[in-house]
Image 1 (cartoon, helix red, strand yellow):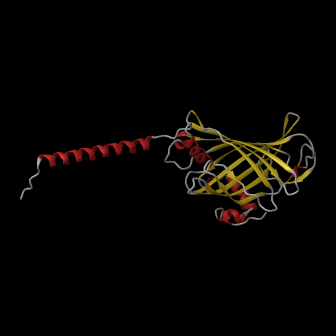
Image 2: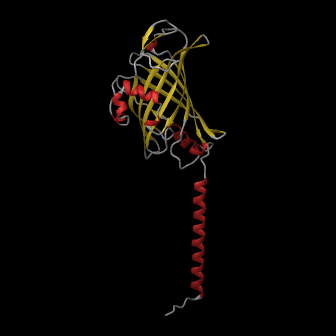
Image 3: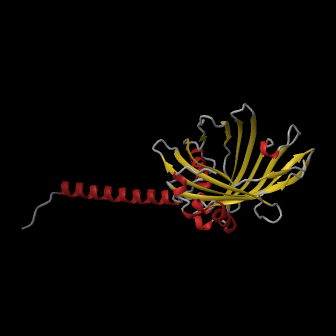
Length: 289
């Protein structure tokens, strides 16, 4: 049995089919455009994602990072090597619906000899000639919040130091095959005894543009040049001597604990074995050192 279709119906069906086909083609082209689109460092919204991808990640998960380098005393325009650090950080990012994220951070820093990289428990201050003790420095785990614009929020802890943080965001830029970003912040730390300390941090982060500008890549293999300039820490016993302490460090962000430097892992196993055994679990417990 055949069904008769009048000319008007046939034309309507033909038009509908043409429209559907046109819509499918348009959707395919739009999907292709989205897949091909690269993040633009000059676009503020893209720059926000690029900054997060360079320093942290744009999804939820773990990340690990390390920095090595000497601290030098700046006195009368000269730089005097003091000691070096071998620092590792374990972090967990949990994205929030408001566009910000929660950050759990555990940082373990070993003070080491500038030349050999071997851990030192004491050293002679080359400026004052005084022998000083150098303990292992474990900070955290700290549970922090970061705003949608990647600004770290540091809450005051009763009985602890207070932080007044000023963050100076920068626009990412591309040089050759890499994307770079200079991140600068200034902190005034007020201690319970009323004394204060100033800390300026300037980090230059970079990673392959193929990762950074791809909207589907959530974390970049970032390299970092870390410089901070700070007031004399009290434990150095520098008194009222004019000058400051400056870090010249280099490091990277890596994807797994196994990718952390072997010498840092060896130090961690020796001096903080409870963290070395289960570094991720350490993010959720209080470590006293």
